Image 1 (cartoon, rainbow, N blue to C red):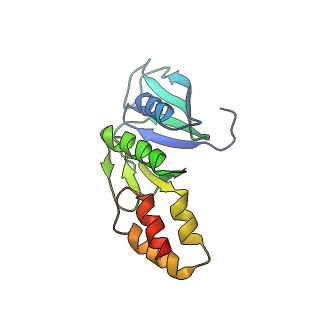
Image 2 (spheres, rainbow, N blue to C red):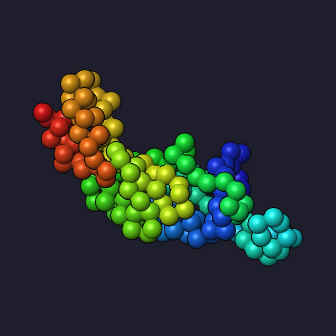
Length: 159
């Protein structure tokens, strides 16, 4: 890997499957080198996929097949900014439709337990905008949603 700082994500034998899914799903994503274990290790055998170098939306990552000892949780997530409802729907549906699960306020989990925030720029712009009353309306609308509905966000912003 060329990057000095890389996000290491722990998987229970599914690092290559996950990296391949991310590369298919997110723009500016790819699978790089796949490294095989030079010997047996606690959760695998010589020759198994040990690590996978990949990028997710331009962010360098390393998938480590470390076994079942650790699980992903909501303390870490990827936040993906989307430009429109079509992109929001496509990414959300890809994650949830591939064995993932919905959560609240634009959050979902993939089938490996990794959390994702599929966040339309319209939502971020409205909440961060100078009109604090509009921001409150948008925030309240978002709190009722699972996948973000941009039309509802824009209606809340207008009041």
